[in-house]
Every structure is written in C-alpha cells, then in structure tokens.
Image 1 (cartoon, rainbow over the protein chains, first blue to last red):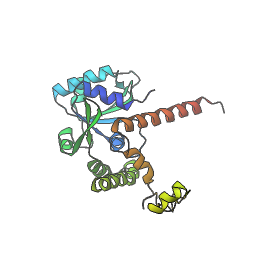
Image 2 (image 1 turned 90 degrees about the vertical axis):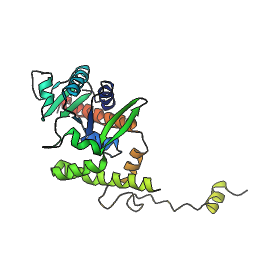
Image 3 (image 1 turned 45 degrees about the vertical axis):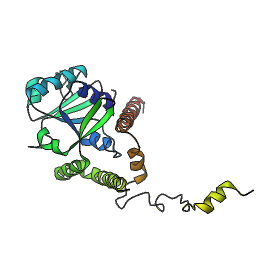
Image 4 (image 1 turned 180 degrees about the horizontal axis):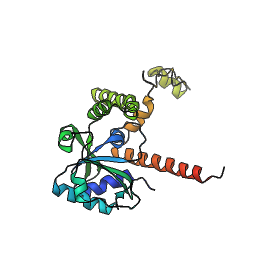
Length: 163
Length: 71
C-alpha cells in the first residue's frame, strides 16, 4: 500500500469535487504533528457533486475496504449520510456524508479554509479551531488524546499572527 | 585580532544555550513538544502532506517487515 495524500487531494481538486478535509489530515495541513493512515473528507451531497466525486474515485481506483468483494462506490452510496470507507491507489480515503450525526458539508463550510497545494490547486480544510471543537464534542478517547497537540498548534499559529 | 563570534556576542548577546529541552522550555504545560510544531509550521501545506505520507509509508513498511520476520 502507498500513502500519497497530496495526490489524492490533487485528483479531487482536478475533478472539482466540493469537499472539506477533516480529521487527521486537516490537522496536519494546519501544521499539527500527527500521524494518520487515512484521508477523511466530507463531501457536498448534491447529485452533480457526487458524480464529480465518483469520477475522482474512479481515477483513484476506490473500492470499499471493509468488504472482500472490492465493491466500487456508487452514486446512491455517496448521496447518503454514511461513512464510505474506501481503499484507493493513494491509501485509505473516507468519504463522509456527515462527519457526526447532522453535521454536513454545508454546516462546516463557513468554518473551512482554502489551502494551496500547488499553483492552481487548492483544497478546503476544516479550520483548526472548529476541528478542536468537533473532536472535543466527539469525546472519543482517540480524539481527546489529540487535543493537546491541536491546541498547542493553534496557540503557536495565533502567536505568530500577533508578531 | 578579536574573535568574530566573541565580538558579535558582545554586540548582540545570545541567551545562554540550554541543552536540556525541559529546561529550555521546549514543551508546553501539556507536554507537547513545541519545537516539532514550529518545524511543521515552517513547511508549506504540500510539504506537510508529503511528510505525513512519508511517515505513514515508513510505519506501514516497518509493520510489514516485522510481520515477515520469522520468530
């Protein structure tokens, strides 16, 4: 297996997929020291955007990773609010209809930031402050363990902004 | 001739070097190593992604090696 988070996000951007990076990769994009083994995105669940996402996922050769039949995602799956846990040529990629119950792309959009990956290529990322709030609210052990590093990163960023 | 470093230090005194990271204040009150965060913040987002990919690849390879090693 190869992990290539930059290529996965570049393919999503090239297919003009409306999505927000959440989870560990969003923490890393903001500068937090974090190790993760998947890329989590929350996608906009309109038929047009799901078709763009499906096209990107075909390029990444995505299949469901928890099913031995290597089933490919379909439009009906990605229109739902569930967590689509996929394996791609760039590593595991989770396409989330909702990050937690009721929390969708449209809810998170005001708290997202556009980060440039390369000239002409950018990606929307959940703000670090909102990510901290989401992880604190989730209350799971693995989320709570990540909070000190995330809070320290936010404090460093804010200190740098002041100086 | 005066030592250049000595002269520079005289004009711009550096804080004394502290080798111990704890004494140097490298960690915050929750034990987070701020030097690593500063290193990551000096990178571009693309560089951070590449570092994360490299770390995941290295850990995955080490796990595979460990699994393949006869015990």
